[in-house]
Amino acid sequence: MTEQRTTPPAKAPDLWTSVEDLWTWLDANRKHGGETGLVLRMLKLTEEVGEVAQAVIGATGQNPRKGVTHTWEDVQGELCDVVITALVALRTLTPDTEGVFGRHLERVTERSLGQSTNTPPSDGPMPRRVDQTP
Image 1 (tube, helix red, strand yellow):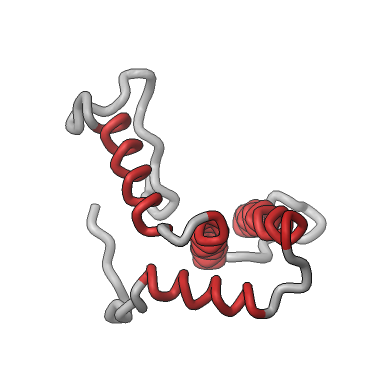
Image 2: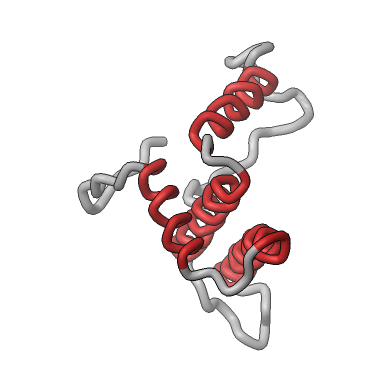
């Protein structure tokens, strides 16, 4: 099944330049430095992951008191926030963010896809995308 877009895709800003710019801005405006600042930057990631969970619960109406409070588009935005926050946290640990991430992605890709890229796992059916009909 192919996805149809209703609007043309926007040109995304350069990922690594944006990560550097966000890190620079956050670093210039931080309230805490040293190890405390480092730990707080890492904890921000947990906060963002919690917002993904909240959006999924809201999109599926799992809280009967609140009903449906979010959309799957909201979930997408929260997932993007997780990725951005993780990359800024990584930049906090190393100025070679692109290199560290690229090398790690290469290892994970090789480990995951290196054996066979055409055979789905044999332990059950592939999960269905949210936007697919049964």
